[in-house]
Length: 315
Image (cartoon, rainbow, N blue to C red; front, side):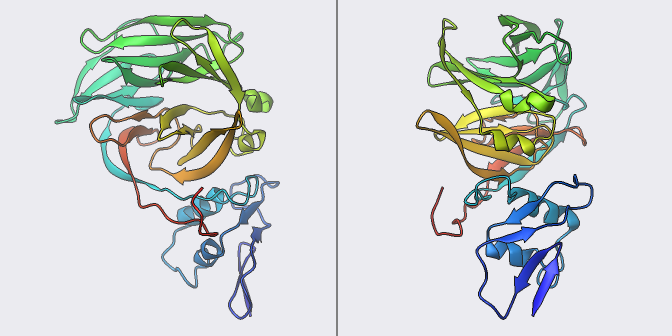
């Protein structure tokens, strides 16, 4: 006998099919948004008859992570677990960390918090219009900055001296064709993400520069990903273990990409305790630091237990 939960069939008396489709939009989702659950185990878990304690939020996240707009093999393999959190009114755009301090980034300033006490100890000075993300390199905090939502887009990297808390311009890109939302150092190069928004968000691009700011390469992302971001783009990014992890604007998900045959390919989506926005490596714990924007929290996360894919293969 077949049972249905939001269009997902859980067939107890028949062999489980390879794909279960959710053909009705979830509450609050666009009418043309369709979901698919590629993992039969996930489909069975969606049934409240089997898992009565699952909340609506859990069901929404599980369904979103298995969206049909992505290849069938892309599933959430590596959840991130919340390690700790601190209140920070400035936690609106991004977070960064060093061994002693956490940094909460809002549009116009960066606030420094003591890791031991959770107390704010300093606030940046210097003019900023729209800080987007930050990371620590050689003892200073480097922040992506744009003039969003003004046109034409003007982008720069600003640098914060943690001792003086002075913000200043490090690299001015001028009009680069998009709004700089995140930048990071990786293998001796700068990687800078220039976002596009609205109907053109799939034109978001990533540029690799050498230390003299000569362009070494330019990439776009798989266009089908941007259906998940609505009118927004990628807000944060870090390189980790040979993969590029990026966040969207407000969903608790990391997109893990790998550069293969000259193109970025999506490997998996990972559940995180952050609500999108800018993220950074945490040198103290080896995990990641991000924000919960709605709750104005700095959040530290550690990798959870990795699971096998349905096919028994790791992506």
